[in-house]
Length: 316
Image (cartoon, rainbow, N blue to C red):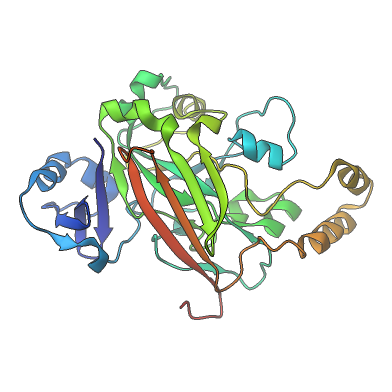
């Protein structure tokens, strides 16, 4: 069974039901905690009553700085929403680790951004170095991946589309809410990854709901492809793509063909004029709720609940 770990300003905790037991460790970073699994195990087996989880303020269980890498268009449902046909070539992009924020911290919309979107993603937290040239088979995953986290790949769509700029559009502070739990896996848990269901709601309205079975490139293959050019270390984070259901969707084919004939500035002005009627983009006061779990609860990454605020507002 997986072990859920929570981080607060006071240190690390093992979560057992609705209570948490402190981990007796000097680890300050995620990588250091992963090197001290004995301390985590001792806390998990402790007979200490613990502290109510509700009394703890969770921080991101992935500490920064670290590498944050993401997969692009990696669920069939998202590919359909995005207008892709046929085979989807695997692609990766980087996010600034300064975008990582806590699971209850407000997502802050920059003043120049109107079209703010959500993307629930399963995050893989590395437990060992992945050197360039590594080939990862399914059976090898426990040797490289220590655990899982909920992440939200928040996106400023007008920056992403008009500038074709993934790094900027997804790297503003608070654009990668992470946690609440780092779910440390046992080798036998990896056989249940495809049962994980990703669910994201905005103000109680379900927007995204898919299992990992909808994935195009699964974790072992993704790590192999990434290792062609990118080294990863313990504590680094890989976001594995989002299911369909985001606010942004491809325009109808007829509209797309007409748009292709227009100068870029005119095309994007028309596109975002139409997007202004889309009620699914995030606005200040919205609350995003995200969960990832298997149906039997064997792996349960907790609930991430993040309000949305403007840069010039004080989050509620």
